[in-house]
Image 1 (cartoon, rainbow, N blue to C red):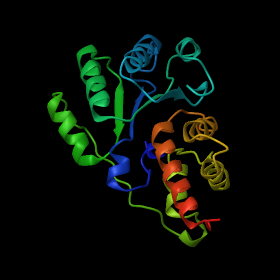
Image 2: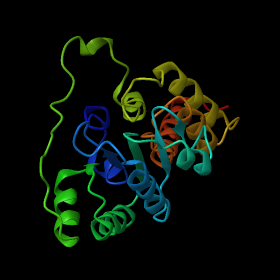
Image 3: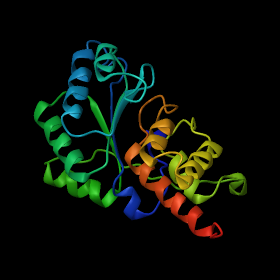
Image 4: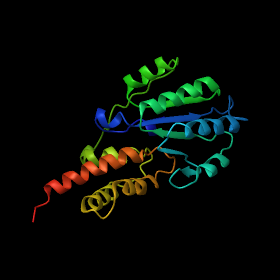
Length: 215
């Protein structure tokens, strides 16, 4: 899915950013899929997800997990976000054992994805690669802002909001985790990684503090 594909950043940062998506196909396995999709979310909840959600109901930052489970219907597209390879690997092992019969898409570093798949006995069906951003790239915010905003594939997080919250973190008015939680709320489908965002905001705040004149 393209909306999870274009996350930007260096390898070290992206190593802590994993999105697992589950969806059905109309006319193939759509009808009667709600129990299996619900099971996907139940399994995901066992492996320390940093976010969960679907675009119709919301994310773990706008809904309770109980509400997310109750709202699942046939064809709901679900997302689970993880910050560690062990968590995503153990989740995929559980999915393999359950054999839910629905499509699973994993977004993350390609070589690590291959190693995880090999360890869990999975064989990737298709590989999609982002070719970057084309066009008038001079109108985009800087790389440090894009690292945060590109974690919302539908473009619901404004770059100016990231800048403002980073400034508040730098001034001590706001903690990085609280700032990251605020950024997670507009991402309605729940693919935003608040743990990675907190680390990115902290790094931005340190750079801001380093540029500020000392009294």
